[in-house]
Image 1 (cartoon, rainbow, N blue to C red):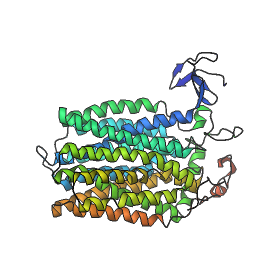
Image 2 (image 1 turned 30 degrees about the horizontal axis):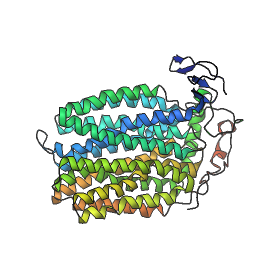
Image 3 (image 1 turned 90 degrees about the vertical axis):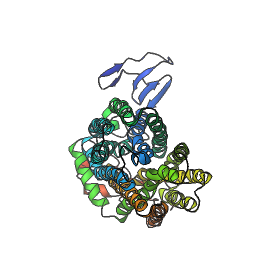
Length: 474
């Protein structure tokens, strides 16, 4: 049993009990002592990151159930104009994705998160008081998006720094809980808007959610070295070295990014995330409006949307685990296909039972579509600083998420029908499926010797040529 030291978080010390008591709580050389168990702090990071992602991203999708409400008085905005607000949000967050990843790699993710928490609160509070379309664009589209961008890249890339093994399981937990958080946010928005109106719908989650984010940042550490720890799964004799928030981190990040951008896989992954997210965001933003447009009640439409999000949590959890075990490429082909082809069901039938079948099938594909990217980065690039790389991929995703809804919305305004919007979603997702076939195998690293260009003091303890993460042949 490891000796237990006082646990310190941002200046707060919790004194542990002694002996073998089941009430132990404190720091150990491995991380945490909780009862009779020693828990590596990497799993605390997963828990904290999950809470922050559930909080920061839930409103982005939950607000889509208000699309048809904004079409009514006192707003009276067109579907295309409303979708443009979501487009602005995704453009801003997508553009800031690489920047936040770069800042996190160089200066540490906690500083980026502090700024994101403040912007989240400001954006939500201002949106609660909006009355004009330009305010929707500014408050919801720009300010809130900037706050969300601070978390969408840094949380995922930050978690990867804590794991040498079982990254797929960690990502599965993180992504799965994010899906549950979104489903809960949809219910919360539906109830708040129905009972209290627009202002409370944004004020309550904004203030409460912002407070949760700011508290959780206290418990999120940039990397294991901040606590004198090694990655989960790292050899016990490996030196503990800080690779964040210093000059070495800057050199490593710049050198790796320059090499990665010379590979086709780097740009294809950005494109795949673009096509896939453009395809599914047509549905995520417009699904409730589509169902109510076809004569079904708002309650049933929200139930279909919640079904989709709940089902997506299964593959949000399973996709990283399967990708870690069998290789990301094969898993991505299956899941992107599951996102594309169920759209044909609701193109030919608008029966409510068809919508629920669609929600299950599409949810399986959509949930896994987004969650394999951190794993494929690890399989391609090992322990390289992939925060900026993932940021570029999230940039592609953000631009795709932006383009999908606005095109779908204006197609509806143009034709007074959602049929072309659904075909658009199908075509975008199908393009992503085809693009995956051009990815190289995940059986070996793409840049095994990337550290050769670094000075000796900037190289990792494992050196160049780190063995590839085991994965199935693609």
